[in-house]
Length: 235
Image (tube, rainbow, N blue to C red; front, side, top):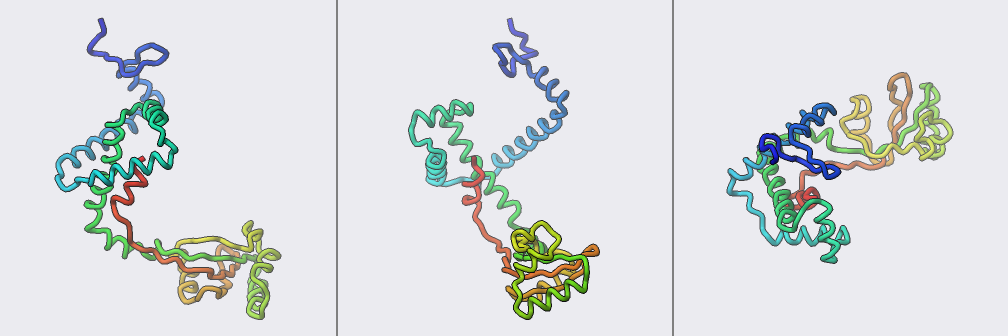
């Protein structure tokens, strides 16, 4: 007769693993605390969702999300879908509930964060805004000034970056890509006053002399609805 004080938690190679043994293994691997925190986190979320009566999700939205998922994962065939459910330890009701819970969680997040979201966005907008830059970096100020003069006279920034820049991105014409506008003050002060296509500098950064060409400004925007975000995170 099985000891009720030590129930089987898992079956491995047809051998039962008790909950006590499982916890011991987690402790030995250093993952017990994370495991417990995950349980506590999920319990708090579930309790919060249950206490609210304003988190109902339109059933049609959930059904459409399930359909979209099956189409994306090529699980439109009922047999393949059932195999997928089995391999993930799910049946259709539990899968459907999981999708609905994802929507409710996103809606809960929105309700909790919405009161301060606009304020936070305004506070952090400088760092959320991005600008696409190309750069040319050399180790002598005189050389940097000479190269900028050549650019102003019509020389191609890309060619000079390939020939003179000391950074690896010279092989892609100095293209840095999109970076936060909240970068070092010395760079931001010049970038904010420039227009796309303009070259600023040279700017001294850690004993290097940098020229930056502004490619494009990418201002941050506050947008997105909870249910749209939930579609992305439900699975």
